[in-house]
Amino acid sequence: MIRVVLVVVVVFLVVSLTTFQVSFGDGSQLQNNNKKQTKSTAADGSRFSSVVFPVTGNVYPNGYYYVTLNIGRPPKPYFLDIDSGSDLTWLQCDAPCTKCSPAPHTLYKPSKDRVTCNDPLCATLPWPENKSCETPDEQCDYEVEYADRGSSIGVLVKDLFPLRFTNGSIFGPRLIFGCGYNQEVPNSIHPPYTDGVLGLVYGKSTIVSQLHELGLTRNVLGHCLSGKGGGFLFIGDDLLPSSGVVWMPMLHNALEKNYAIGPAELLYANKATDVKDLLVVFDSGSTYSYFNSDVYNATLSMIKKDLSGKQLENAVEDQTLPVCWKGAKLFKSFHDVKSYFKPIILNFKKAKNAQLQLPPEAFLIITEHGNVCLGILNGTEVGLENHNILGDISLQDKIVIYDNENQQIGWATANCERILKS
View (tube, helix red, strand yellow):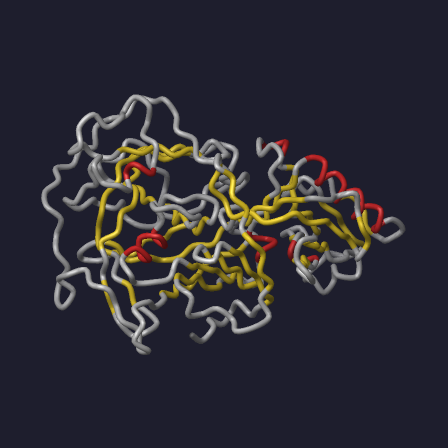
């Protein structure tokens, strides 16, 4: 996740961790008719269903999208930043909290159900180097650092997540997540006003994988982020469009967890560029898109060349983003912008007719000053090395599907203001 930069890899640091200061006992039981964690059965007799969450937020001016999850007993609402660039879900936590950022809700108070070192899921998350598990019944600590140098230190816990499934059932599985009692937020950015992060990249620690392991949903997720704000997120495969989806196989890197596809060539205004063999990562935890220096400079050069002779000037006084332009009149909508800019197209060479089209609104913003700014940034300058990231701005007004079962990523143009029927 990045809000100025994206999470590309999880790094575990050497730091001095305090002991988690909560007394734990046995795990509490579900109330009412959900006293046992059983597998749900869909109306057609299959055991899988789906969960759909409304999404709130926008690219500009908020800079993030989030969902509301109810957690605990009694359940309390928490805003979680949706992040397909990291795997661990965590909440700011009163354990007590040694360093927490401002949040919309009271800090999560952990239940008495801790995750110990002998839990298989604990082994999937490297421990802090000076806080390794010495005995099986010790608490499972974590430390995660993001590419923008933000971080969360905490312990894994388990609590109730009451969920309403698309087959009509209501169930409250006990899921594992991070109880973060020490967060670092970079001074250079305005952090999302949320209670934590909903990690969505593949891995056993994700909420998606846990629901799948319980037999409740397929190991599939997707999101549809509206350019007008809002949208929806889904876990499970009930909302997949029956046609019109472009599918590409996922690429895997043993050193990193991310949703990557490629190779692709980059076109601007339907004209070829020198950018070939481009690998791109989908990351809903990043507000903007990021290209490495070579790709960024080539893209910016093509845009500027195409703008030559048009009545646009550099708006150096607008510091919203590094590259901005102003017109003879203030820009009020993308209708005013489209006559100046052309689409960016990613043409995937190993699949027939596989393209990802980025219209101007998928790589530009209109600022409060009435200027238009480029929402693709130089990732090399902010520490992303050779990675190329498609953030929220480029994922808007598309249904994006991460099919972990078939190891493929799909997308299709969609009206994200309306949740699809299952």
